[in-house]
Length: 517
Ligand code: MFK
Ligand code: FAD
Image (tube, rainbow, N blue to C red; front, side):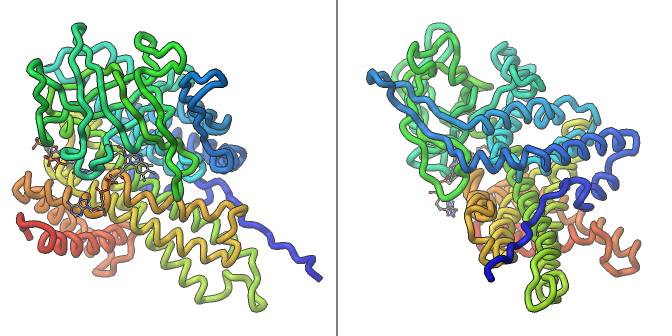
């Protein structure tokens, strides 16, 4: 009596055990690259099962803390993170999780390879995928700035780009993205009152308060501030914001005790989820920073970072949905109820099948954005007009849509384990807690739907024309191939796209005066 124990769900190699990513890569990546890529993903999938997943769990169990003062009253502002968290940084570097996207060894498929690795890594990374998303976004901005021949090349930015994309753990850097202030996270233009004072050597000193900064342990950050002119005037609005680069522990400007560059960490946030992540409030008090690009183009420049972090957000949404499903499917072969395993109960299978379908749609839509990103970055032409338009319009829609799916799927996922899904020591509640942030950071749902409208308005409707042209053409292809029956995996993208089309019509007619549909 009471001796029954339940076999727990087991994580198998998420690459070899789930045909979705494997078959997708096979469809798109040329054979000459695929052999090498598959070999690496299989090895990485084994490493995830062998130790990375366990380390990721430890990152939640050993949450970061802040020590503000030493025994003698000195302000030291030290963020204490676990060994496992630090190891994630080394793994990310050696695995080339950022580097692959910039080495472009596999041409336009390099991004697909990089994001495939990220897809496998993120649910096991103990939220390290968050700083990595910001690393990728910062690398993208710095790459375009250092390639821009209209602006003199700044050696600091070249060095930062090298560190962000390094495979050497001793050189690899992470980056923060400090945009949100107390007055506004969505409305950055009104909310930002950080000021930048020009110094004689051409650098700037920042004074301000950043209200949400994830990865407070980052090596560098990109941030926004308003440049005060010689008369003491401060430019208002969106065009008054400039983009700055800073090193949190710049050796030239370190405080002798805390080691920080004019930064005080006021506190770490007490959060519903993402507890693995040191998200803090920072007082910038004379932080030495360097202008990136032209003054007053801060929002436009940091939008390049937002594009990348929003793609990572979509990837994470799809990856967490898929990972929880794999665990749930395994559990269905182990948990017996009413004399049979869950897998033999049609109603349970139907629930899993619906969720499976949702996760496939999220995956396909996210990887379509990744495919487009790869084309625009690594083909000599930078992609066709249509491909660039699609990347612009689908990125915010994909982020907002997959984030909502991820929250619903995490809830369904926990329920599929019954009461066990609610228990902390199964590790399962983390999925739900962490999913809730996906629709908040990197632009809330409404802000992203307005971003889609911004893209439509700015292009005078052209991005929408490209969107429907692509949909109609591919729907035609699918109908031809399957004689009207939408059976192929691509058809599933179109089902998701059909929802998006309905969504766009809705937001275009409800959300703005600039109507296009
Ligand atoms: C694991 C994956 C996730 C990782 C998460 C990492 C941790 C979380 C970190 C964060 O949450 S960081 C903070 C994220 N914050 C946001 O996402 C801000 C949300 N608010 C917006 O997105 C606003 O739309 C935005 C601040 C970008 C702009 O608002 P404005 O001030 O009304 O901008 P405006 O005047 O419309 O645009 C200024 C310029 O930027 C315009 O260009 P032009 O000067 O040429 O006309 C715009 O076209 C351009 N722009 C704006 N959004 C763009 C864009 N360009 C390209 N793409 C976009 N998305
Ligand atoms: P608000 O902008 O006040 O939004 C409140 C509500 O208003 C939302 O529902 C929103 O959708 C809605 N809304 C806003 N504008 C409109 C509009 N025009 N039309 C209709 N509805 C609208 N920020 C950083 O810069 N760096 C970080 O590293 C970072 N890390 C974070 C980590 C966590 C865990 C969290 C939770 C947040 C983090 N953020 C970070 C902040 C995050 O980006 C912002 O919270 C987010 O952008 C929303 O801004 P807000 O909090 O000011 O909300």
